[in-house]
Length: 451
Length: 180
Image (tube, rainbow over the protein chains, first blue to last red):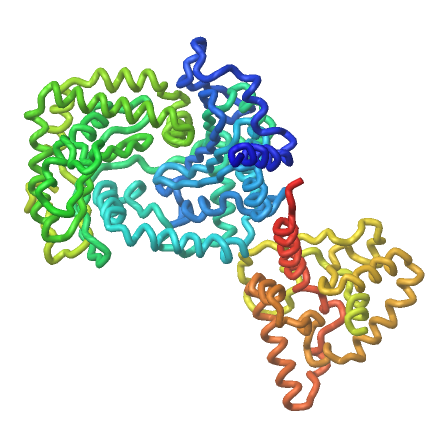
């Protein structure tokens, strides 16, 4: 009785959607037919705007505008973060409230994200609603009005809140500190709008006018038909100015140590020069992060990775290794956090674990490659993930790393290349960010690192 | 009555609220752009009523009356001098106030609109109100050269009030919406 009633009710509640969000699925082929590879990205040009998409055939789709306007390209401190928060505010066609409520009625989700490299405006929706969401994203990118009062009433409180949330996380602050030691300028500057002065809505509008152009952004789709998204993008992104890419200063890796006091917790980030994204991607760093690991794939177990074993005897301490790929450089880092005294005891073990990579066997490598492949595939299956890296690559080089190629690159990593990469890391200077109880936490040279 | 008169007495004006500041302060960079108002019908004759004259939004009836009259030039020409004279006699310009300084501000809508005023306009408004208060305390009028001239008595606040009202109406519309 109950399921029947629910199904009826659900059907009725969809009635208002005249375009019938679900109906186009019936016309498309079933999931993953043998003829097309669902993980193949297609690239095209919609009257100057770069469009890249893959059609997974799934009932939900997502679409992202990746704009090269992250914090490393900002002319004033904090302006990228402010511009990110102006996404989906009032445009000359509709108000912010209208956008929110309408998307709610369509069953869609709007998101934005900010990195040091990009601002991403993202929408997830039912497959049939593609035209509406391309139009909405085009509207947000080309017609946002940048009202002064929206800045003071909506944007600033949101910025403050986000800064407060992130800066009460010691791991985040330590990673920011490691970036500062590693790059000083450009990539080294704060990502979020911590210092917010010398700009208002006018300056944000100017920054948007400079960065929102056809050469500087790309439209990335997943679960959408490529021909359709190209067609609509040509229509709704046609108003974008033709411009060139913004350029930042080329990053120089310095290395060094930044320490700051915090009462919210303790974290240490140890960073090294890593792998850039796009075609210049070096898969051994990816594999190295899985060898070091830290995040267990098995519940209630510290896992079998090097870092997992290094911290398992130190209560409350956790360690994770990652590679952040920027367009022209990368940062490989290990983030360790926990209670100050235990953290102090764990750090030498963590450094020893990195040095231990030289004693790994082919068995360990195989396990790491399998883990990396699994994560890569599941990220590619998920519509919303990894859109930023795809967009970033297409803006910078005009090429997309196909999933199959990346997998092949991961499979091709040898034990020697990983060991060689690790020894170059340890021979060079580290960039260390230490946050927390500085009375207890050790200096980088105390735990056996060059800074 | 004053409301109606002030309405008709409003001069043919400039398009943007940022333009009509008369203070001698150094220019402040405005951080907000003026909301555009296109609530008036387009068939109004330009010389008799500017399209950007914005209505006292709180009163729909007055707005309708205004539209009715301005659509009929002979009626407008008859009423206009009476309205001007009435506003002059009301005397608020003689203590240095503009009509919109006297709008009832104890509502959420107007408070929000006041917050959205560009800094320059907000400063001038505060100055005029303080000056008028001083006149009231001392039972005096300003020297004649400081009186607000009819052409200076422009609706500087109502564009912002209208913007807020439009938002509130939109929110109500969505809150009351039912799915068919």
